[in-house]
Length: 277
Image (cartoon, rainbow, N blue to C red):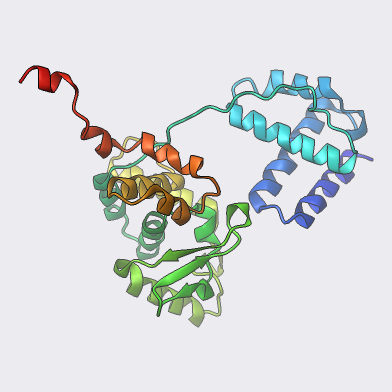
């Protein structure tokens, strides 16, 4: 089996398994890069080839990137060739990074910097509902129930469906956006030139808006999701409810926000305050 046949089989397996486009893209890329690096046919790849690739090509990559790469190789080779060239490779411990979060004032500045009505609506919705960028991109007009002021995220990460509340503040703008799309015979809530808008389009909008707003932090679409969760926690919302709103399978994933809530930390007084009274 040559490299192209192998990569095609990987794509077929991923599609049959209903893996996300993100997984399909990353798993295909990882295997393609390994094969290109080794200059070998897939059935000649061994543990030393994978180790050499990690040592020479992934020294500067994060632990999570290495873990994802090894998962991609393991998936492909066990599915197609029935052996695992990563079996004897020790996985690095994932880093525990605290995600960047915008303050409420920074969110206001970011949204205020947007002059394009559709761009402002998209970013407002990501923050207002804690969306992943893929969830916004795949949101369809029929996923919205304006009478109930609710919407439905279908088959999100982990193949989970969930409900979200449509904020009163965005209701009329969303109705208008949905009607405009319907008039053009389109099924997705947001599109560009008649086609579904891409993750990259939205990432670019966020980056440029942050720059225009004078925000010095590194801001991505996921920063808005992190900010949504953190601000809910600061407002006293129970963490299990936040878990449901975010669509997290495990509470431990949501609990990271307990470590980054600055407003909660500000309430804690140092013991020296009492000593020096």
